[in-house]
Image (cartoon, rainbow, N blue to C red; front, side):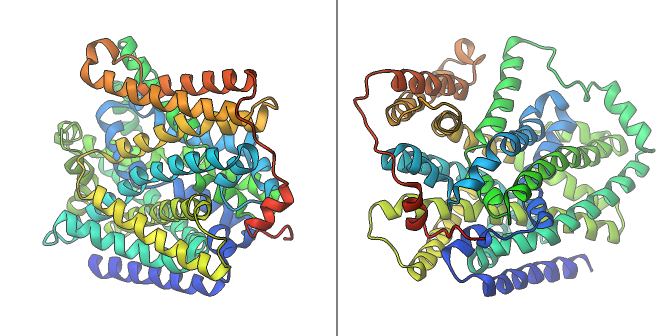
Length: 493
């Protein structure tokens, strides 16, 4: 029964993606759904894309093992990011009427900064996408034990790629609405059942408090505080200059929808992220042996615990709801993380080295790049032992160091220049890489300071110094209307 429902759900998801292809007539439709999404779709896209595999399987396991002080990045930093985007960037993004966030760097700083930041942003998705494909493979492996984990990952990657390939952002939007409903209904019912099996909500909450799991701030050494701060800043700031965030803002039908959809999606994400944490900790109350299991040294095995528990301890209807919710969370995020790097690589990197594409050629190239990203992410997924949480955080470290300062200063500091952006990249990136090396070879000396924070500081210093120095590197501001026309985005709605 469970297997049949899972297969039918996968088939239905692919069918919706293929149906969405009927709405794709241009690159604009493929990348930003024609800038026409109503509020409920905009909200669903924000929530469903961010509520992914790491939230359900990795963050929940980390909370069950170590408590709130070890999940500062997600959901706290991730939710704060969406609020920052809503209040400080959404209106600017929407008014620019561009297809990708890389277009902003082109408009503000020129081609060199556009290409470098776009490559950084695109590369950051490899970790995030790989995490989703790993999770999808893990779930398939739990349901079909005879299929190896790596084979399961490849099957999952093929499913996500197929339905995203044809419909683009329309596939993401339509499936996200269905998947949001499945996530919310499924996980709430599972949480109620697991809570009852553990003795009730009060019992679970009391036990979590007794074990110190609800302590938000670390009480240990300075190193623990620096890790806490580093994870929070990496997720909250490093997630802002991301193509998936930009796409969800600019896909809305108007500026007000973009603002409300982002804020509402962020707030709901923060509240609902505690549901899988509650489910995971309930498992340790039901069976104390899970306390030690959640602290295991093998991330993939730890992340299997919750799905395995549901299979072993709950009735079939609960299993259907849980796996429907988990698959929804993974598929919605995976599709978005495939589309985003494909969009920015095609629009902001490949076009710099080729002649201007026709819209038809652009569509086919977008799809070819999407398949390439899927293949690379699948290879990473099948050859890594990192947890999903670690893969996502490592991706955001790239954009924190390379892209955040040029974006924030470009929007809010009039004196920011192309030279400042170049210096920001040239100082921030080596500082991060160099400090990462020192951190690895001499942990006793350097472990207190996360390398990405050193890179962020270097990026900020480079921006200020470069912008205030005599302008050796100059940039002629392109005409906004010309950029819009070049990027094929109509100003009409």
